[in-house]
Length: 279
Image (cartoon, rainbow, N blue to C red; front, side, top):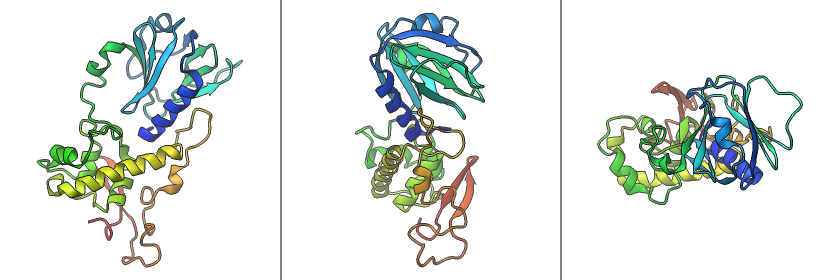
């Protein structure tokens, strides 16, 4: 599933390609997604100017000049292709085609766990998709004291808390493991045992990790591709994620234990960490 860095990469590509363009036509070949595409989706988009494109949590939002916003989530396998003109033929699982006066957007989603719908722009904050979404990792209001106030009474592992979208939105599984490694905090530590000082360190580690991932175009592990079809490259910089049994980067010259990076499962998700460095 595309996480925040991947979605941010997609958003930036869309800004460069179609911001302030006019939607000339919309074709929907399959409406059966996690949320059914509205029957009037094509009518509501056609002829409108894309006035703003931004990210909210793991969603891309395209605000139109008629007062509605296209809300886009990529689910497990969804991706958007940006091409210079309408193709002569389509790929399997190309479900939505949006043609602007500059280029064409194609939404491909093999599993159809994604979302593409519209919401009145004024109602975005209160829409069911966003009502319980927490603070964005790049919001200036997110700092150590804020995180400490949210987790200090929780008796769950800190890794699980980082995946709770009502606390901080968009971090995702890969980047939670990477940030905890950077902060030298064990994913097994209970939130109630994390100090305020450690929360400050962890917030900085989260931002550092996400910024590096965005710069690298995200992580390509399975389905994710950038809108131009290229892979993200942050997986080449992973310190612990997917590295079970290997030495972590800071133990590589003198690893004090033989088993290397450990893999465990927390809340149904894989967690990778160095039990020597992360306490």
